[in-house]
Length: 261
Ligand SMILES: Nc1ncnc2c1ncn2[C@@H]1O[C@H](COP(=O)(O)OP(=O)(O)OP(=O)(O)O)[C@@H](O)[C@H]1O
Ligand SMILES: [Mg+2]
Image 1 (cartoon, protein in one colour):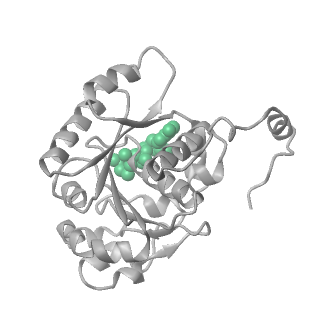
Image 2 (image 1 turned 60 degrees about the vertical axis):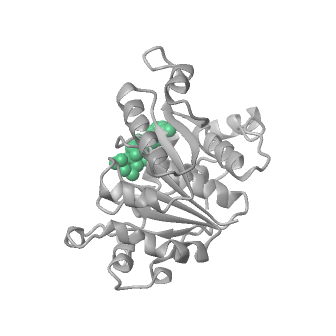
């Protein structure tokens, strides 16, 4: 079955792009063909996360009928396919986000699963991207402003009659200052797909220009994303078994850990 999953949030900086690329990469690890589309046209980040900030043909060219969808597809070494958006300020004025709906069918011809990252806010750009969704995922953090914006997004999605796969709470820390997951659950009244801990491996992966599920596959954040991807795909995955074992930890400490290619 073809699935177009849009990652949205309302509030900015909550972890949408991190979620889009890691869920996409995790589903790819589970053997699915995945395309990640950067639907954040004004402040795109997907290309930056994968170390290819500027490419010749982008989603912006596709939306302005200057290129075909397949010309804007780039393949990551993992097999993951990506359609980046343009970083050029010149391209900004020409953006017509509502056109993205015209290309939904073409996206699904490229991969069975299409994950679309979106911009913050609930303006024309974000809602145009929400409109292409078969399913929506709302990303939020355990803080009042992020939850309030997630609720707004939820109401809008319901008005648009879009099915919501659930909420992903990211950057979860284990301290008393944060809202407890139970409280968040109660406020949102929709299923929680998963929680991703605050994990420095995420920042390190950004520096290494790749998804954390690739750079630090056994980290807490990577395992959380794999767990959520497994849930979405209805496949088996044991996060505890995937954790670094005692011997691996010792080896790493002494510099004998597995090296990345
Ligand atoms: N689980 C995590 N642990 C630690 N840092 C994280 C985690 N998830 C995301 N971050 C960091 O939070 C910052 C914002 O993340 P990201 O860019 O994914 O958010 P966003 O919602 O896409 O932002 P924007 O609304 O600007 O597009 C980044 O620096 C990212 O590395
Ligand atoms: Mg983003």
